[in-house]
Length: 455
Image (tube, rainbow, N blue to C red; front, side, top):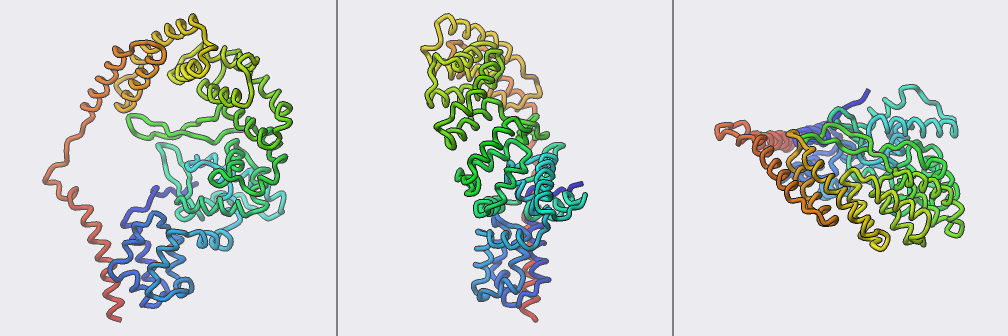
């Protein structure tokens, strides 16, 4: 079970939360008026880090009383601007053990994580720590932690039929990453209790590309864990769009080429003198895969550039296997884009007859690809396809105008068919609803201000 919130608080919702906290707080009158005079509350309502937990914290007398009433609004806004100290207090003292584990697991995943993926990462990590520290757990800890955090530390929402979870705002992820940077044990426990491949990548990259200190110090252990979990399950997803609307999220697993490049980069940093020992077996298995024509070709080209940059020659067996894969069996626009990049980067490795064969393959692909899209296609998507075909045609020496022109015309037709009429000028509700909301919010706070001044 999950509590579903809107992705962001609406203005009326923000106003009602702030109003209630001011009204029912134990703040002295002069502090309340400091937020209401000259509508200072507006700066709070529009702040990008608006969050009920910060509002609750800053409307308690024991926290507000640390500054004079004249400085209270400024202090309030400063805490919204940099709420780390509030997050730290809440994280350490105001949430449950299970909730802390959920936040730690989420820090190692993407900003929009499917609910079921977060649950798996949480359960694996939570069970690891339970065994390590022996604290009591309950079957409902996951649901309780989710409910406890939703609307404050995290937000849940729907993309199509799928439920996704993310941090409530970027300042919370910033705080969690800073927390892990200062922690000696938590990053290592996340390493030992990881579930998804992306968690190892996140731990290695740390805070804005600066590795967590404890991971840096545990290099051999990290390399061993990564090697063991290089082919672990992936939590990465991508939004699925249909007719311009998000209809859900679907798996978007990193390819073996992408994973392998990451592994080799880690090896190079941790064991540069023995890199061949760590990577030899991996590269041999990849070469077998490539000779069979199996690869994410775009990732393969990037990986190949990296390998050549670290010393691989164009006569190396691994390079030749990659070459064989790239020059045969292209089926998608991504495949042909990768082939074009390979031909541009290593022109001496591609013969004239091979270039002629690629041209013939692309001509057949372009004709089929341009006719593939039906009336449900998104107009902008059709224009992107046309642009892509034109660029690829230039790479392979193929005139694609007959294909791209049809795509562009179809995009214009679909856009015209879907055009909606302008709202009727007599639609007073549509024209004035925004102003009504503004008036209602101002009236609510003006009334509170008047009541306080009369007492």
